[in-house]
View 1 (cartoon, protein in one colour):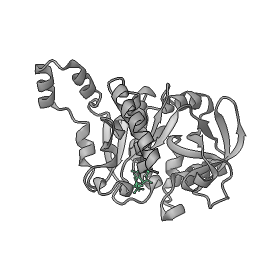
View 2 (cartoon, rainbow, N blue to C red):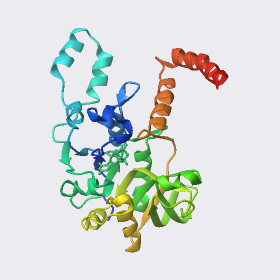
View 3 (cartoon, protein in one colour):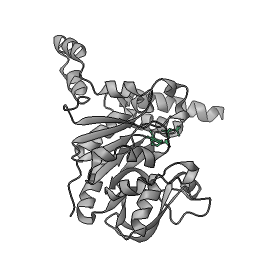
Length: 298
Ligand code: UTP
C-alpha cells in the first residue's frame, strides 16, 4: 500500500570542506543565494510537496542552522513597530510549527547513507523524502512536488535524475536504465555510485531529491561502506532493485544548481539575482558592462 509522503530528512552533517574557510564557523546550508539561505530553498520546496515533518541530520558546529528556525520576538517587534509588513512575511517563512522540526546528530561524517540512517527512528515505517539542500532546483513546479505526484503512480523508491556529460559521470550516482518514458519516469535496473571513467551505465545521474521506502533503512542497518569508504545511499537503493522492489528515476523539469561547488553556487547566485525584480535591472547592467571587459582582458 502506498502512503502519503509527509516526512523529509535533510542531511546537513557534512563538513563542507569545499567552502573553507567560511564553513569553519558558518554551516554551508546557511550560505545565501542573494538573501535566502540554501536551507530555506529546501524547506520551501518540501512544504510545497506536502511535507509536514522536517528532520535535520546535523553535526557539531551547526547550531546556527538550528537557531535559524527559531522565532525572533525582538526582531518581529521592531519590524512591526516600523510597519515593515513585507519583511515580517519574509521572517515568518522561517518559522516552523512546534513539533514539526527535529534534529538528530550524526556523530561522524560517515557518508550520506549513514546520515539518512541516523533518522531511522523518526521515520518509522513510512515512506519519506530526502532533500540535499546543496542541490537547488529552479523551475515552475518544485522538483519534489513533481516527484510526489509521479510517486503516487509508481510507489517504491524514486530518485531525481538528470542528464550529465560523460566526463562528469564519475562524480555522481549513475542509473542503469531498464526503460525511459516520455512522461519522465524511468524504470531502473541498477545504480552505480561514482563509476570509473567510461564505465557509467547511462548518462542519467542521481541528484539530491529522493523518495524512499523504510526498507532502505533496513539495508542501511548493515552499515556497509562503498565508494570513498562511505556508507552510500545509492548502494542501499540499488539493493532494493536486487530484492525485486521497484526503483524509478524521475527526469524532473527545472534547472539544477550544484551549490556544493563554488562554480555552481556562483551560477545560482547570478541566476537568482537576475530573477529578482528588485535587482534585475542594476545587476544585468553590471554584467553587461563587465563581461566585455573580462573578455577583452583574456
Ligand atoms: P557532500 O558530498 O557535498 O559533502 O555531501 P560535504 O561535507 O557537505 O561537502 P564537501 O564535499 O566537504 O565540500 C552531500 C550532502 O550529504 C550530507 C552533506 O551535509 C550534504 O548535504 N552529508 C554527507 C551528511 O549529512 N553526512 C555525511 O557523512 C556526508
